[in-house]
Length: 580
Ligand SMILES: Cc1cc2nc3c(=O)[nH]c(=O)nc-3n(C[C@H](O)[C@H](O)[C@H](O)COP(=O)(O)OP(=O)(O)OC[C@H]3O[C@@H](n4cnc5c(N)ncnc54)[C@H](O)[C@@H]3O)c2cc1C
Image (tube, rainbow, N blue to C red; front, side, top):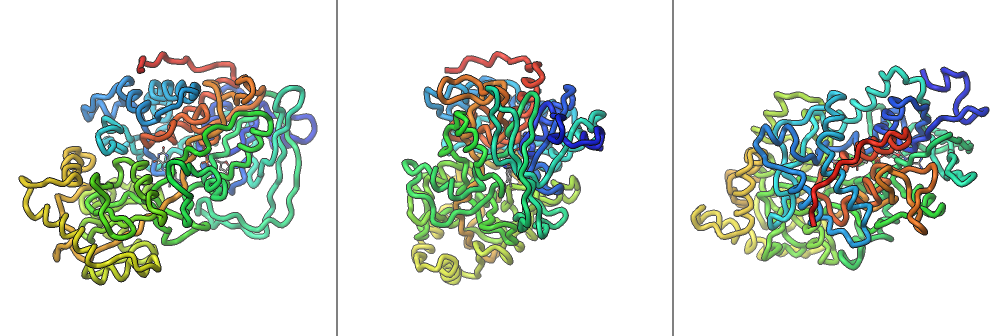
């Protein structure tokens, strides 16, 4: 039963007003909604999506969460601490001196993620995989000093189910009205505060998404009805980032660092993450910061079964494959290796105007190491099927490799390097790959391996050894496997491209998630921003780069803090360690 059914009239009709309007039913919006219900508020939750898409990007997410000094880390004897994590975060973030709020958010997140994010989720029944993954360790040990990527048992989908389940079963469920296919187009500013918003009810000729399909293209809109709604206390913007608007991504592209935007750009964000509400906030005088800071990936391919225009997938490419530039020359002298430093890989890729790379491996390597970041291609993890999941870790994922070889135009395989070179050129429509160059580059790497461990002198092999030292990686990393090896065929080439994914910048907020004005830094009364819309806190908690797993956690953290502020019950701010 909804609030409207309980009272006979929906919010917005007659004088009945909710305490809070939450715009966006992604993870951030759901967390805030749950906490607002718990603190006795009435809530109107608006989203453009269909019912089966509630949860936004978190439904598709892998479910990795950055936490510090967690029970899982302790059980694995990983010596982590708030100080160490904050040192890592600040080094990677590389904040500018004016990034005062982002830095404060970073300090709070690092200090409180274990209890206020992980602990809170545990109370909702969420569980994390006991072996903590080690993402973004840095090419030179300058990223995460220790493993911190806690994989949610059940992927991001389990996070959404837990929070949405808690909302649905809440004794005060009737104090929430959920309105889907409702697009917020403007904010209402009245009597010195944000009082509500303008909404278009999107009606459709056909439903764009089949049942169970997430984030599909919207169907055609037949007739739209526009209306206004008002809240007594707060409007919370939880409408995601800007990654779904490729035009905006191109406009904000950090050209000084990455050159001109790629001609081909894949989309890996939410179809509705269009930045429209960022613009509304700006028009009200709110401070929208650092939109050119983005967390885009250099290891994406075209989706074998695209559900939206330019649909891309972020791979976890095999680390035992070798990375080549568009001419087939190996990156060097420091080789590019997936998962060590995503931003450095993107910079190297973008040094060339063509802005793509090649990863060359073989079937044996790919079946052990290839993976995809997301719930869709990890069905055993997503559905919590422990035995098949463990078998896939032990035996690899040959079916996943075949799925990509059969379906993604960026995957080709061949029985020889000559044949492979021809197929690579067919993928790009260029003739940049010369088989002699390919043979030289791969032959040199293979020859180093053939000389034996005692004579290894290649940075990639040193890093493979380091990967195999950590039990979270050992089983998923081949043992110094040659590329051209008759027992490991066929050869595989993967064309990797740039994909727009996460927005690091966003709407600037204080630690209570109140939106701050550009002019005087004071809060705009009645207006809050959370999740990716707020740059996961403060308009850019990550600064210039992320340690990974920090996005879902940032949604939970900001969602909770906004609700606490609205309820005048701020969660106690913890004193972070002093790190210069
Ligand atoms: C495949 C994939 C894997 C990922 N894996 C990880 C991971 O392992 N770890 C991690 O930390 N992060 C991960 N992420 C990132 C993370 O999922 C997102 O950053 C996070 O879920 C964003 O949540 P949000 O609630 O802020 O926004 P969203 O999920 O984007 O939700 C915003 C909602 O607002 C609605 N909306 C937008 N505009 C309007 C409007 N004008 N009116 C009404 N409604 C509107 C949208 O329909 C949507 O439902 C992953 C993302 C993807 C796509």
